[in-house]
Amino acid sequence: MALMLPIVAEGNVAELDVAPAPSARQCEAASAQNPALPMNPLSALRSGDTMRQIRIEQRVVVRIAPQPPAARQSLFAELPQRAVSSRFEERKKEKCVALDGIAGVQTGSGNRLVLFLRDQRMISLNLEKACRARDFYSGFYVEKSKDGRLCVDRDKLQSRTGARCEVDTMRQLVEVRD
Image 1 (tube, rainbow, N blue to C red):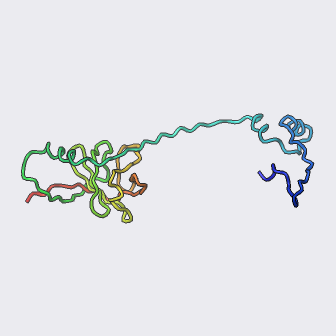
Image 2: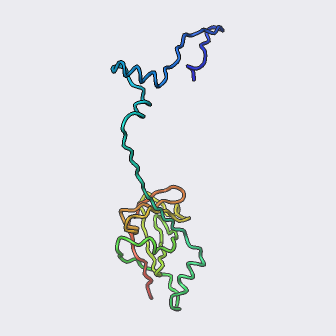
Image 3: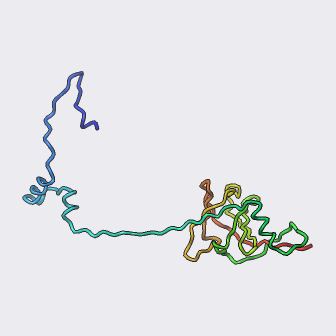
């Protein structure tokens, strides 16, 4: 921008002898006559044989939303009627769960999330130590992998507020009868 403005020195405008820039054809003709001169980059791009490559990437991001309280109660409504026990125990589980089997999520205490599965199971997820479950109050996003599963020490959950946390442990919550 400064090169386009005239030079002002102590209130007087100085005149400069500026030659017009050569056109692309003039540059091509000059480089053909003298190969030591640099070639116009646009002409080189147009004249050269170039190979073009297109990369198509597909990324699928799955959103897991918290279920409203009525939907969570309907999950329990399908269970046989018996005395409701509010005590659950964690048991070992495989390290992965199918993404399409997750019906909803609820935050727990500390760095724990509870997943509600479509087959009436509940899974407890512990996030990395630096993560807080309350960051995931409105659900989370996870990039769908080739196998379509959410796995421990592989997948990262991203909250809608921007926090990214890796799943540290995964356990199944089982009702304990007294």
